[in-house]
Amino acid sequence: MEREAQVSEFEDKVVHINRCAKVVKGGRRFSFSALVVVGNKNGKIGVGLGKAKEVSEAIRKGTEAAQRNLVEVHVQDGTIAHDIEVKFGATRILLMPAAPGTGVIAGAAARAVLELAGVRNILTKIHGSSNPSTVVYACIEGLKAQKNKQACAILRGNA
Image (cartoon, rainbow, N blue to C red; front, side, top):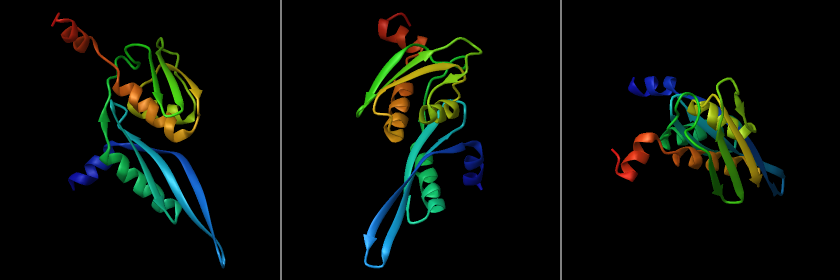
């Protein structure tokens, strides 16, 4: 019962589905991997990769993996606190706060993460690899690296 309530709280989005073929004597055997992002649009976000012989099973596994890997991110007034540039693998992503009414200016992979995290106004730019999996992980790292005013005050000793 408690599990059902947790599932309904989160929304999931399939970012990318990859098909892999193995050539065997009788023809080709296909397997699929699905990159899924889940979030509650209020600062909780998770990403998971599911692999299976069928697409629907891969999506289900990816959703379960994403719900196990939830992280808390700081979102203030529908945007982020400050500019941040993150490098993850060959992907470099730049996240910049935007004025109210701007919307989410981002590619498909970054947009899925940001919308499910609850960010409504942001500008992003991806340099380097635009592979959906590395973009998603880089975006989450950037959101986790955000500092709020209280954290900065504690670091400076002004708390």
